[in-house]
Length: 227
Ligand SMILES: C[S@@+](CC[C@H](N)C(=O)[O-])C[C@H]1O[C@@H](n2cnc3c(N)ncnc32)[C@H](O)[C@@H]1O
Image (cartoon, rainbow, N blue to C red):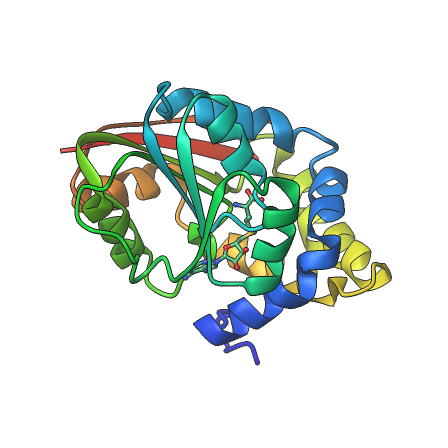
């Protein structure tokens, strides 16, 4: 199903996340040695103000959506995988969950004060179009937070190569339904470096774009304001 570049078409990505759904939360905790909760909280705190209307796109099983709600947002979680959404709904039935595509969001222009995407934009077929779509549904001055895996430049580079290229696919093989994790390293490898992702955000109409790195540069949080 994967193409030569390791990129899956959208239908393949959706089917892959439907398959992964039962092991997704466990894999996150194991792969990040439990740090992912801290990164999600930092993302929510960077962009959500109490009372904000917030979109969490590519919400998956809903952990970042819940963090946005805890930061005081009235949150809508959106994802195109029904199985991931099932888990999110069970986790937080009080929140709003919508099945939909990040590339064609089912919302009017300017519907939200803030938006977050956690480990989601790496999977979309057209990254600039996805960021433009997020810009469209934010009001002017609305804030975007993008949390994504990146590749460290310093001493962690070698350890990271072993972890992502060897251990993560191995973990995927031993966990039921986890075989799709062999796709993860390829998707990280082709994703833009933090400076390049900043430019993608600026080109899509975001100002004041900045990023911070977590865990020695393994994960980046980009924040920008809809211009
Ligand atoms: C790696 S998971 C991240 C889930 C969650 N945001 C988190 O922080 O754990 C990526 C999610 O993006 C969703 N996704 C990928 N491409 C999408 C698209 N074009 N539209 C909507 N959801 C998409 C997948 O179904 C999957 O649930």
